[in-house]
Length: 171
Image (cartoon, rainbow, N blue to C red; front, top):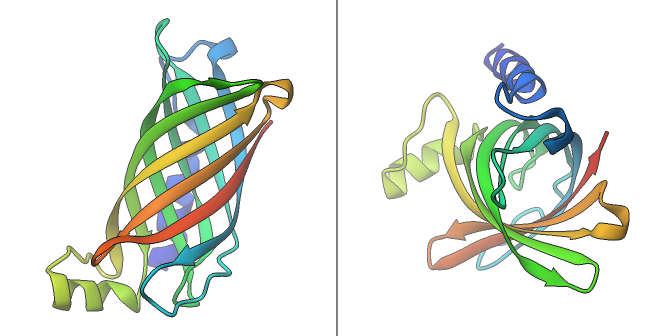
């Protein structure tokens, strides 16, 4: 029951966020999580998932804020609700491709992993929910600006733990 309640609340927040955003600077999107590459661990790299999100600009700067929620099949072969919010900044363009770097914070449900991380590293564990802090690099082909490719880095014990690839589609 905790999973469904958290997922419903997170999806509602993602879908209805942005009281300060201008309609022209606001996009709703669907993210397809494609998979991960893990470093230093033999885990499941096939991690499909779907997230509903909302991103927006505030003011005239190149900062973009986002909130998203959904569910994914995690590296421990469990279904995990996830909620993330964050900010990104324009880094520049290469031809028609816009590059953005950002950071997201949130939580995901890992019933198997959370107790292990709490025991071994003292990470918080709230009934299987663990905190996330992840840097992200996005690439948007400005000719098709309704599609965004994202690489998300997850920290590991000795540095980089995993890279995750996802694709977001505006609607």
